[in-house]
Image (cartoon, rainbow, N blue to C red; front, side, top):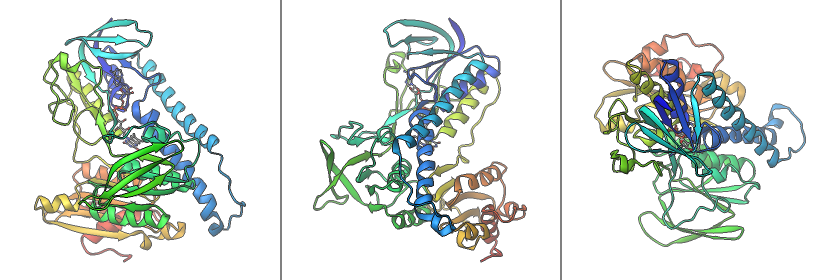
Length: 466
Ligand code: FAD
């Protein structure tokens, strides 16, 4: 078969790229080695983790907060098998949705491992060993990422688990040790704490959520600690010994010192993700990689080999589903002769715990490092009417605006629904808004969005409610 475009991998990058290309009239095929489409995100990432975060939050609400609202339901009981089935139905609904969309857009889907057999040729090796050769004017590598392993630590997905195993546990562990205080570790740590596990998070750095705004990280850690998660920061895991039914984690201070042993029923290794290029034949095809094992591309997602492109987690940039999707759209438009573009300065980043953390644009640390003069406007949810009414007053909104032009440079939020609140500032930033623009936009009362408006007012030192 001969195509204008063959996309390898149907995660958020790949399937979106294929659909957009088909919309633009390109004859398109996808190759996926998993049984279902949607990649890491829909199968073992964003979707199942959010389903468990939602269900476990409801469990905690019912257990701890219903009495405060005047609701008596007795002691809620956990049916973990049912909760896992709820999660799976969300995953199935989404992956079937992608299958439907590919069909609707007349994208041919091949199941098997895609291997680049030279420019213009993709070999599909199916599970039964059969193979098929596809001719392609353009090839897109959208093979995503895989779990980063800790040297010397074997992940058996039962006692020592990656995020994939942590989404599948059949029993709530009495004690869960999470290695890594990044987004995935804190989200999954929150799920199992809410369901009854004692959770200890071990982090090499002296802070949680590396890369996000420092003040936000500090406040967030305090909130999670109040909820019962224990933290061991500036600590290095030097070994994990698994035995039947548990494991012993050896930890020592990052700066060196006496090691300590911590016993756990389950250990979650959540120290990041690495680009996935196994079996693709990139070396033979002469595709250049960078020093982090990512496929190297130019600003139009082209590799050094004519006709081969790459998007999503497998290339540089934040490993986020919406970044991969936007790159998929941009590349399809470029291949169709249009001028696709992604604004990397405005990619929101959200942690879906309770409260949520959301950020877009630059952090205070980055602005200081770059010597940019800025003004800060901060507004706490304790002063927001709706947050008070809901009893969800943890957190704040912080807006950083250019000292000279008032242009919004970054927004960082800890608070209930922060992931939705960040959308309005992302739109504002896309349109190069000033803090004054946000401050003068009428926000509905009583909503949490008023905290965003008040933070914008606070940039000009004229917030009303503090
Ligand atoms: P992937 O989604 O990884 O898809 C790549 C696909 O390529 C896979 O289906 C794979 O099977 C296939 N493939 C690989 N090699 C081949 C081959 N040779 N032949 C055929 N097929 C191949 N991001 C967010 O934005 N929000 C979140 O809330 C979020 N939560 C997450 C939670 C967890 C637990 C994890 C692990 C990740 C989460 N992410 C989240 C990150 C998100 O999943 C990724 O950024 C996103 O999936 C990247 O999309 P992608 O298309 O680049 O790759």
